[in-house]
Length: 57
Image (tube, rainbow, N blue to C red; front, side):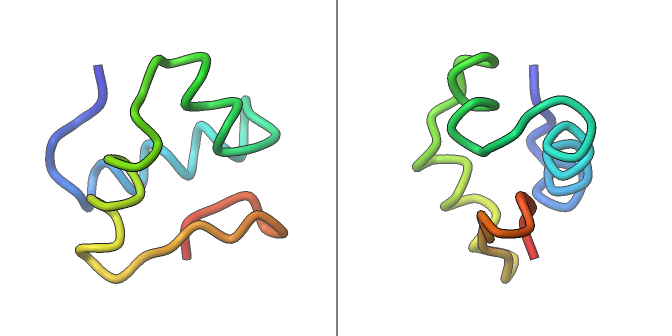
């Protein structure tokens, strides 16, 4: 289960992307996470996914 707090969520997602997943799609598929919902939560605090960096910045 992922954290609800968006700042903690950002940290967890970026760590998982760095250490375990080659893309956001792979992470969402493996963890059964709604990609649109995740992107929406993190964009609410000013972050967007950059595929070339494989992280939210």
